Length: 324
Image 1 (cartoon, one colour):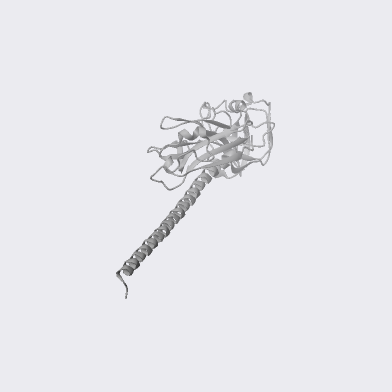
Image 2: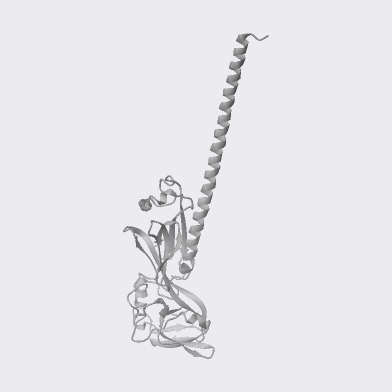
């Protein structure tokens, strides 16, 4: 027989066991919840980092060809560059500070970003080759080229007395000696058997040389130029833009690039590109409170409050300017 006191003691012990069990269970649940949140946060971080890396890679890939062929067939110094294009209208890219330059970017919201714009002048090869070597002492001369005739349609002749006003008027010869000199197309091209005859003009008066030599089988390059920057689209979204001088207008190329800054080494032989890029997931709270690792403190004030609702990542790439 159980006495009343023994029953009360047993009930109290059971209650204590239940409370202890609940405490342990709550700790287990809390641990599971914390672990689940940690796993989810880790997953979000990995996804954000991967999305940001992909965006940065896209931007760097857009700049690789222009950087590789920056200055091809053109004078290296800014002064000689402008002399070579003295016949052209004083407009972009002929009035730029040489084949590579970095300047401030004028934002659509009225702000200015230091070193936020890069300008690159470069050559594009379309598999047209020069048929004959020649020593050229006259300002106007003819050459024969063979190759992809359809690509020659990308060249736009200039009718005299007008001046060249677009990169489509110009061709480049990388083997020209003793110095590089861009040449513009004057008049229509003519067919001659399998070859096409081009009437070309170079600014002999602005050159250091009395004559130039071009070589057989050298590839003819076409001129192109780009400007690139991050700007803010209507609605506040940051986008990496490129203005291709063959197309003529600024085009959005990569969304989610919050900022881009450019720098040239003292010899102008290396271009460094620094990107601030966001992940895909937008968070309700501020996710990036401080300056993202690797991003210069001096540029941090330009990070918009809206961008801070994303995880932000810094990426850097250096491009060797092989033709300068």
